[in-house]
Image (cartoon, rainbow, N blue to C red; front, side):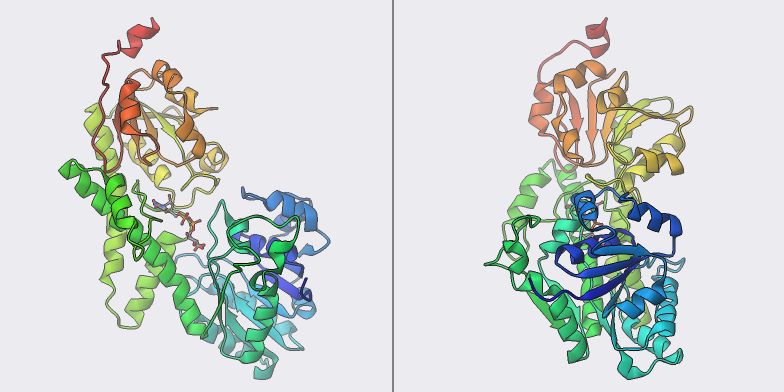
Length: 472
Ligand code: UGA
């Protein structure tokens, strides 16, 4: 393995924690700093705090050895050659990214620097942030020769974050000095040289010794823009296919066939063309708004992004309209809801379109039985159980005696339901699928009225007796 490097990672959220354990997995010595004492204690004790594949194993392997957790940023700064800032950059009221946490970290680092350090922006930040970090270091009396600021955006997805980190499509390093660029190249050498993939216990993924990931060296400003532009483009792709799916519904065409037809064009590609109830999560909504705001501040018209957001918002309302079209009136209707997380394989409910839909349905007077394999605890903190909302133990209990079952998150287990059991469990065999998890023909053969996104509605092919009498 290449030579280990001493690294500090500031912030132990999704990006920070995953980066910390993955750097350790790559052979480096890592200090992960968080100012939340309780989090630090939990991580030291082996609690991952988030639901993420491979994280428990890696944390077990390296905690308190190759990854140390602490609250003391001064000590971490003194001991490290590179300091990765991975704190939150939440959306402010105006849509901009709120960079106050990044600034606070920069000021604290400035107070403890006595030898050369590379300060790395890992959080998603707007262009010019590296200059502000540099200015803030200088204002706090740090000699310009004692540090460089580098942008090294992260492209990991929740749920597959560890594998994404170790098997990236590309590693982007925005550096305006050769010295800083060479530190980052050494840090990523285990991946870019392919060495990591030879390890017996390496986490598997698409990179190999023969095909290691490329490292793209750019200016700091270009790297900052690459991150925002990537997320905005992916969000745009989703809104585009959602708009096309609405068109398919109106024309009685099938969006799956259309997406396949356009995705086979290698210039377009098949990924991120799944229609549904709109994108959510802690990144796309915030980053599209922040990128739009950056453009506005730089005097560039980027109204295209406003349209992307508009289509995304409307997608949830269209879903409610679809529920209404199947059930006529909504007040007093009993609905089973599958999925609360913003996507499958995560317990994250930030900006979850599923939660927004649940709120809209509750406001319409529906009563809901909801199930999610991982996100119910978090959802209960924002939407407590009450007369009209119950959290249940599995998909069939959610469906039990309901007027319709709604699928709102693409958990793999929701795509494998026992249809015969489901048919018998529901009061009326109606499934409204916001994630297109089923084949409409199979649903109609199993006796369901099945409404999905951008595909013709399916009605029962066989005249099965009504569920209510079938049960009696
Ligand atoms: C996203 C990006 O995919 C990552 O590359 C990026 O690093 C990350 O944001 C970030 O900036 O930190 P993530 O938010 O974890 O990752 O989730 P995605 O898998 O991208 O999904 C985002 C949303 O889009 C979800 O609500 C998902 O259901 C939706 N989506 C995704 C669709 O509706 N259709 C698709 O075809 C794909």
